[in-house]
Image (cartoon, rainbow, N blue to C red; front, side, top):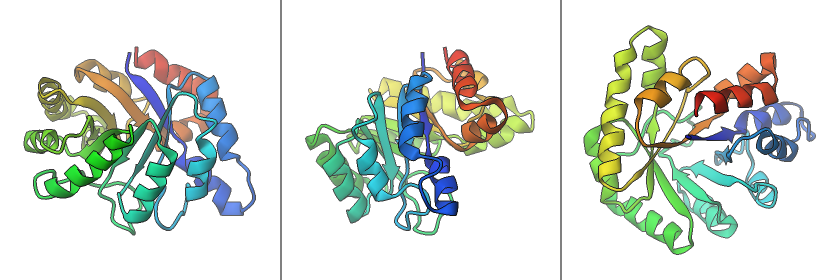
Length: 237
């Protein structure tokens, strides 16, 4: 079964819009795990417009499943990750002003940088994953960085699937096969939803984990958080 890690950034966005502590990020992290999610994902950004760095520390003792922290490995982010030592760090090449993640790493151009960061994380017993576009050369480049896993950037699949183009999954299949052959674990995320997750899971082999936030929280507004998580878990079996 592919694991579901729930990204709770949107909960923090809602909290921050009014100040105070409603909805409570810590309680939601506890709840998604109680409802069956096998992990909690956060993606703090330098401006802390949703998840704050303090949230990352506060969540550490309550995440009893897998704790995945995503972000661009600037100095402050890396310092935080090394102190918290989550289960997994997912390295994402975000621009400072990016609304959301919009590209994977060029694992060839940035090989030396990634090797340095990944080596430091692995020395601290943190599993590493790097965000990559579904391109074979980037998967091969990821292998040379020493990363434990890749996270396939699935926005293009989601966009094309919504238009009826199911063949858009093909590059992801090819990349997952190559990654597995190279001994790299395969994660995926970005715009996966209840509409497309079952097809993606059925088509893409060796899929260890998906990280889903925006769609899951939007769906939960109508169907409830517990119900939506249960539906994801069913589709990921």
